[in-house]
Figure 1 (cartoon, helix red, strand yellow):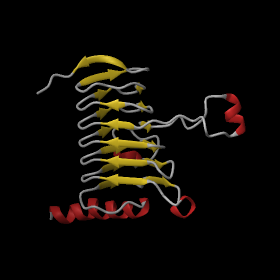
Figure 2 (cartoon, rainbow, N blue to C red):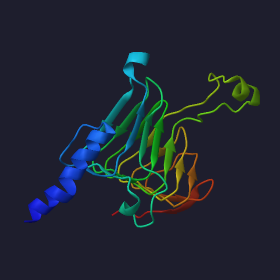
Figure 3 (tube, rainbow, N blue to C red):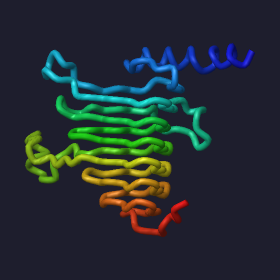
Figure 4 (tube, rainbow, N blue to C red):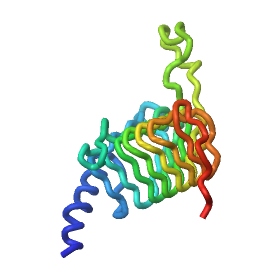
Length: 200
C-alpha cells in the first residue's frame, strides 16, 4: 500500500515535472513543481551549454513545498553557450536561482535554502557608458565551487569567484563575495566569519 501511495504522490508528479522542466527523469529525483531551465538553443549557438544533475536531486518550486514559502520557482540558467552547471548527489534546493556564465559546481549533500541566488557573473557592466551602449565585453564572470556537505541559508546570495569549503554553513540572508574556508559558519552582508564548526 505504501509503495502505491508513493508512486501516486511522488513518482508520477516527479516524472511529470521532469518532462515539463526538460530534465531527464531519474527515479531518485523528487520534484515539486516545474523547474525553469533557461538554455540558449544549440541551433543558434552550436553549443547549448552543459548541465549535469546527480542522484537524489530534490527541488521545490511550489509555494506549499517549503515551510517559509517560496518567492519564485527554481531557476537554472545556463547563461552562455560554453557555461556549465554541475550538481552532485543528494542536493536539495527550494525556489532558488543557479545562474552560470562560466561554471558552477555544487558538490554532494548540499542544501540550498528558499530564495537563494547563486550567480557566477555580474550580468551587467559596471561602467555607465557600457550599460547604455549595451556592451557586454566588460562584464565580469568567475567560476563558483560549492563543496560537499555545505548548507546555504534562505535568501542568501553567492557571488562570482567564490569557493565554499566542505561542511560550511552560510547564515540566512548572507551575501558571500569571498571564499569560505571548510568547517566555517559565515553570515551577514558582506558575509563574515562567525565560528568554526567542530569536526566530528
